[in-house]
Length: 113
Image (tube, rainbow, N blue to C red; front, side, top):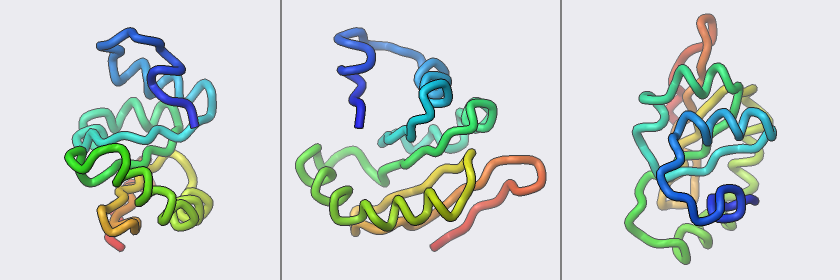
């Protein structure tokens, strides 16, 4: 895992499009709590051919979300293996994957789990 601080230092305001492109270049999965990223930046996610894991909220803090991610890690990995990139995986407060969005002309769809 590479944090925003490790990759960009103390620089704030890095555009989402830059972060998405960097994830594509470095072949890393983007973990975010930005619920709008799934649709607002869909074209960029598709071009960068990345996988995005989106937390369902950003209000519970790092300690709770860290525990939830640790508990649901294998399920996230299983979904990343099952669905080819580009895709977005919605991860809930119950430590489970609740939705997968596939991007692309012929495969664009939402799978509610």
